[in-house]
Amino acid sequence: MKKGIPEHGRLRTRRTNDPEGNRRNIIDVATREFAEKGFGGARVDAIAARTRTSKRMIYYYFGGKEGLYIAALEEAYRKIRSLEGKLDLAHQPPEEALRTLVSSTFDYQNAHPEFIRLVMNENVLNGAYVSRSKEIQRLNSAVISTTRELLQRGQREGTFRRDIDPVDLHMSISALCFFNVANRATFSTIFKRDMASRKALAERRSQIADLILRYLKR
Figure 1 (spheres, rainbow, N blue to C red):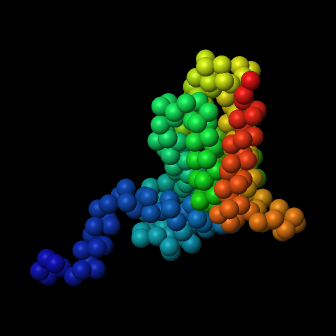
Figure 2: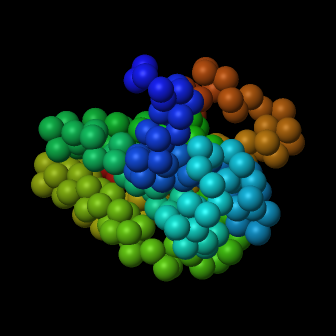
Figure 3: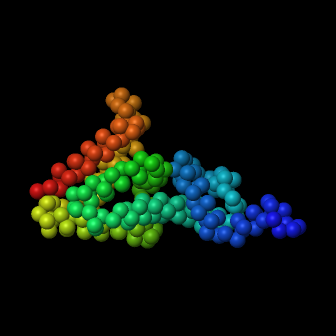
């Protein structure tokens, strides 16, 4: 420790001089707040109280609650799209690549229920804030390109049907994986069905991949 500078003072200095770290911390906290309470119920004061910074800095970085909410949505989509970009699907046979994509989507959504809740809340708002983000449009165009390339490889090999739209395929994968998290509380209660154990998740993951492949195959 430098002479004359208390440890807590040095920590505060490092935080002040780490704008990207502060920004990430704010978005992480805001994501939980928006996922738990929705846009209307979330409060900037509550977010500031749980971060390493201040309400003033939240307004400095994001301009206000709406800007922070859009940033949280962008980061949520960035994380799942970034994961998909690391799957190396181009070097896997089409059927194997499709299973990899389905499994990755299923596992990510189950591991990150805050992503599901954010998307559900934004749909309650009729996509009002997603429509204002060019970054979200850009991020999600990447998964469609990946899906299109995967389809085309399978079609060239004679494995996949030629009348499949990549957006439709992405929607089907997303919907089947999404349901297992979004509707778990009601569905499992009504039908007395285990939807959260390791065994149940493995079975459902495999079922979804089988369903999608049967739909795709000639």
